[in-house]
Picture 1 (tube, rainbow, N blue to C red):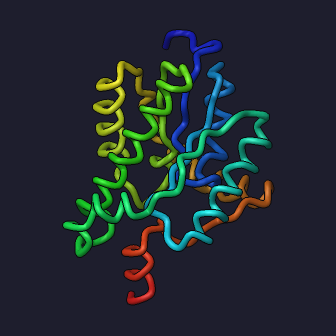
Picture 2 (tube, rainbow, N blue to C red):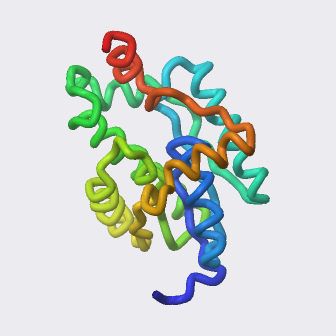
Length: 187
């Protein structure tokens, strides 16, 4: 593995708790980490604000910076409208991940980062191969290098739960979108 000392990396944060393991691990490998958070899919706005504040708290705890996209749910709703009846984990989620990673790649370029990574692979409910494949494709489109990681390995998810409690971070119970919230309430 080549040395990552001082290399600027943008870390896409699906939420603050899921960033509690990747952020310090990447720093320990010598990356200069900038967090990135977008929440177009998060509903309602109050939920978005809670999650964004938690990301700010995580960045502060790491002594780092975080980039936030302006909250714009109509844009996301329009993009996924044809897939609104898809089940959780299906094509709608794939499109949502792709949109988030595209936003992260654009932000990485703006911030002068050469590497890109995501926290999405810490979840036991998501397919890390699918996510890393998307990440590699998006990163290459923007001339970035993708850090292929499966953060849930070595009890990553469990460690993130422990660490987020230690830091007092808000832990949500659903991905955030109006469709997954509805499914959770119906199921």
